[in-house]
Length: 120
Length: 327
Image (cartoon, rainbow over all chains, first blue to last red; front, side, top):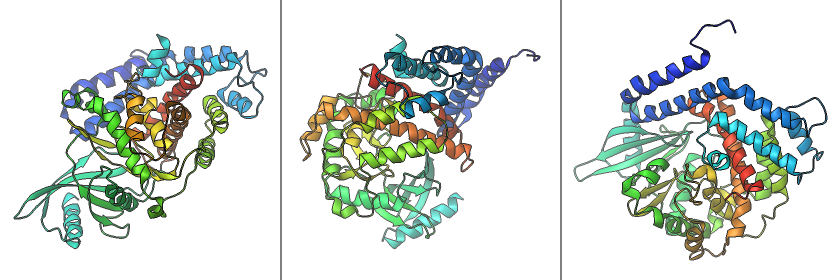
């Protein structure tokens, strides 16, 4: 990357802090609610920038045990399940779906109760 | 704009014999697709708090007409179910648009407040039983009165949801798996009922004594009553309190005890499980619908954009229920 610091992740953090410390208390309740959502969204973007690549690679690596072709994508995995090409009782498939779900929620909402329960 | 709305409101109320000055119009955070206004009507005798609930014209494909929600509330209240009293209904072509006016019911709807604030602490242990009783009263009403509602058997809904999911061309291995699993389940042992369709915290009004009203009937239909029970037991609606199976506040035993004290259909725990998976898949597809309404520019909204990333919440709940016991 040719870009200087602050990194994209650091810039987003700065925006989040600004909204949280300077804007939040100025807003009427129905807009304060929207601001909370806005901050959640920025948090997702920040986590995807910081951890997205590693979380994806982890899943793709395990996919290669199940998908025989080079098409290591969630689209191909979906097609294989849909077309009956995979044994639905296969533990390896189940574990892949668990890993995929965990790694997605790790970016989208790491505070989600089921995720917290499963990583304990 | 508020003055215009106030004038339309007083005109509409006058039609049904309610005279008074409309004031203190205040927008409330409601469902994602409806406008909700709280306001007061004062005349020489009294001041009454009321709510206007109005369609935006851009509701999702699953929603019924706003005015039809009022028709349902008028019926179920006769069966003893707790709902706000309807005062006036407006059709789409009228000045107020597709909407209705009802009594304001004191209490809280915001889930996190109900689960956290001291005020509701005594109400929470009672709530599951009360919810069971109340929704059983809804399910017991004669469905002949609801010919205007769509019939949605589980099998048809499942096919519709799957087709909707596919239309967005965003493949999910977990949804594909869930769909195949759900197709194998037996959803048939029931009697057709009025189903609320979105029965959970957020759509009920609660005060210190417990349940006051069931609101937000936009997903109502005729179908399997177990859908409402599975829905309120989905982790999506526990708001972080996942040890309390019923809505983040109660135990399944209490919900079913309340339910079975009223309902013609007697329900046990095992019957609810596949409806939890069904409900979680359904919520996942609803998240997709909302997100793509934003992405396709039908509506530009931060809430709808954000909800697209809640699909992964339903995926992890599905794998938890199917592979890890869901406990």
